[in-house]
Structure formats: C-alpha cells, structure tokens
Amino acid sequence: MNNQTDILNELKELSPFLLQVKETEKPLSVPAHYFEDFTDTIFAEIKTKRGFLETLQKEKTTVPPAYFDKFADNIIAKIKAEEALVEKGKIKALPKQQNKVFQLFTRVAFAASVVGAMFFIKHIQNDELPLNNCADGIACLTQEEIYNYMNANSHEFDVQQIQEVVKPVVDTIETKIDIESKDATKYIEENKLILEFDDSSTDIF
Amino acid sequence: MKLTDEEILLQFKDPASKEKAFRNLLSAYQERLYYHVRRYVHNHEDANDILQNTCIKVWNAIDNFRGEAALYTWLYRIAGNEAITFLNKNKKRNEVDIEQTSAQYRGASDGIGADEMTLKLERAIASLPDKQKQVFIMRYYDEMPYEKMAEISETSVGALKASYHHAVKKIEEILTA
Figure 1 (cartoon, rainbow over the protein chains, first blue to last red):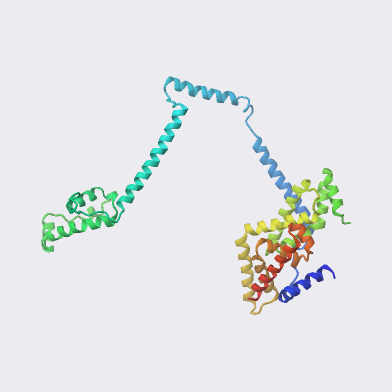
Figure 2: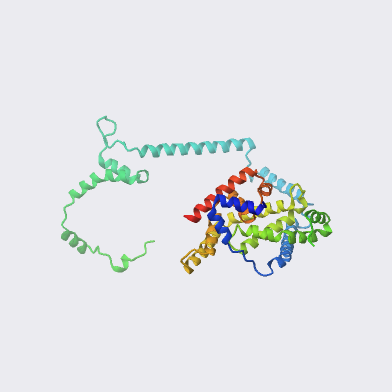
C-alpha cells in the first residue's frame, strides 16, 4: 500500500464524511505565470530590503566629523563650569549622602500624609457619625452650629451627610417665613428688583 | 535538469554561486511551499505574502543551515511558522474574508455546493488550535507520512496521530452541525 492510500483509508476510518468532502474538492487556482515570475520577484524584494538596510546602517553610523575627538574635553569642560558655579555660591549643591537622606525623608513624609488622609476619609465616611448627642456630655452642639461648620467645610463632607443636617434647619427657616406670593411680587416691583433682559443675559464669565 | 538537495547546498557554499543556488532551490520547492501555505489562508494574495516572507527568511538564514535536518524539512518548518505568524497577526481580517465569501455563496444558491463546503472547511480549519491546524494541513492536504511530519514539527508520531484524530473529529463536528 502506498502512502496516499494509507492516508485515505485512515480518513475513511476516522470520518467518511470528510473523505467525501476531500474527493469532491476543486483544485486551487493560481494566477497565470505566477511561479515563472516568482524567483525574480523574490530577488527584487531581497535587493530592495538589502538597499533599505544598507541605508539604515549608513545613517546609523554617521557622526559629525571629529565628534569623538573632542567629546571627553567637552564633558570635562561642562563639569568644571558647573563646579565653578557651585564654588561661587550660585548653585547650592547638597552633599550626596544628605541628598539621599532628604529623598528618603520626602518619601516617608509623603507616605505618612497618604496614610493620614486615608484614615481621616475613612473616619468621616463612617455611617455611625454621632449627631448632636448630648447624652454623654461631650458634644453638645446645636443643629445650627453643626450646619454652619459643615457648610464652611463642605468639601470634607459628602452630600448625604450635609442634607441630613441641613433638613431640620431648612424646615425651621421655612416655618418662620410666612409671606404671601402677592406680597413678595409687590415688594420686588416696588424695589425695582426685576432684571432687564440685557442684564439677565450678561456673560458673567 | 533539477538538482538534488545536496547539489543545491553545495552551490550555496560558494558565495559566487549563491544566487544561482537560491534560484535552483526555489525552482525545486516553490510550488510545494505555495500549496502548503495556501491551505492556511483564504486567498492567493495572503499566500503570496507568506511565501515571499518565507523565501526572504530562507535567503537570510541559508548560511547558518548546517544540514542537520533535510532541506525540505527546514523549508516546511519556516513556511509553517510564517503562516501561523501571519494568521495570528491578521486573525480578524482572515475571519471576515471567509465570512464575506461564504455569504456570497449563500446568496447565490440555496443548497451547499462544493465551493461552499470548501469555505466551511476553511472556516473549520481556522478554528483549530495552531498545532492541530499544522498537523491537519500536512496530513489531509499535503498527504505527508507521519515520519516526515514528525521531522518537521519535532513531535512524536504518536502525538501527531492523536492530534490529527482530534482535528478530524472537530472538523467533522463543525461541518455537520
């Protein structure tokens, strides 16, 4: 038995359906003269790539004339110029060791401030924040005092907390105001408080 | 007259005849390599890209070829790897190509013709893992003996048989679904 027969028998055993597909398959089509021209196409491609690589290599190795001859002198001159400025006091150089300690201190301080900020945020976000409970004799502030404090420091509290504190104060204010809307309109008209059209469209920014 | 692998490799050793050797190598293997890579992709243009990349790699690496494996084994390995690399790079585009052509056939006829079955088969092969895909193409299309496949893929004959078995079953499942 030859190799092809072996393969077809194996396929017949594994999947007669796939064998049927294989037997009815059409051969692949290739453009005319493709293989005749292929070798020349490849050589053209190789030459183009080689030319491109050679250009790249030339560009890579191009350095201004005598660049390396004066390189060390230029660097030393720069170092000396910087040292001269330090001596004159125009630049204050930190000793290397001190510089390292300073960097370490900065990092520790930063880490501590992050931890502190997280602790504070967690603390104020606690749902069980005591609200004006005088029973233990520690925090006997009025609702108004708490409201004023939170209003002045609103950036430190979330909206829900402020609303909870504000509600009783607003309720009190609303009950105190007892003005008829007619009276209010009359008051505004008498005091010329209605804005002209042009004023209302003024660009405040 | 076609040269043997040994004669081609001998020509490569002399820098003066390198180009001639390469022409002989392409003349001997270009068609087999083309039909091999064409099975991985949906159209001629992609197969041509893969074949060109393969040949350029061969040209650049031929000086380091030590003859430890047969020449065709080495060429097939490079071509297969190039095809897999190409497929992974252009996975999405290849899927869309197959879908579009498949939709054209569906529009043209109600029944499943040989061409549409070929497309279904291509789609099923595309869904296989890389290793199974290579094994299936070498056995089903290139009709290669397991021993040659083992040399190319550097895998045991037993593992290749198992891989081919799994691939055939998966493809049959997809085609008959």
